[in-house]
Image (cartoon, rainbow, N blue to C red):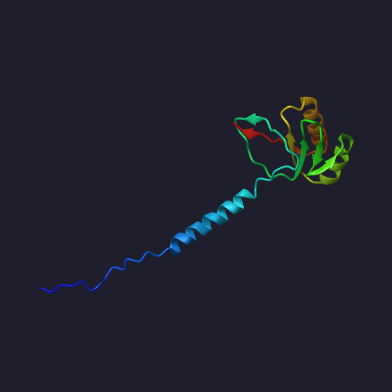
Length: 129
């Protein structure tokens, strides 16, 4: 008996669907990685159990050697209030404080008080455990 199948299975494997999935994953990771913006000065952040990600409109960074920056612009301690006033002018804003964990609390309270006095929401940047 000469039985033959009319439909032959092609042994070739098409990679087009796999490349589509890899391309979509690449786009996803590229977009989500841009939401986390590093600060300009190197800071050793304190740890906390919960670390929420907020949109950073204005960032204030204080390093362990007491160098200050506002939105990656290095300023002196006396210039912080003027910089924040010009950046927060007339709008409800979010200020994220990137304070080194070795900096005394009085500097955190001082900058947080300035931002709160300008009616901004103040958050402290931390890293998760």
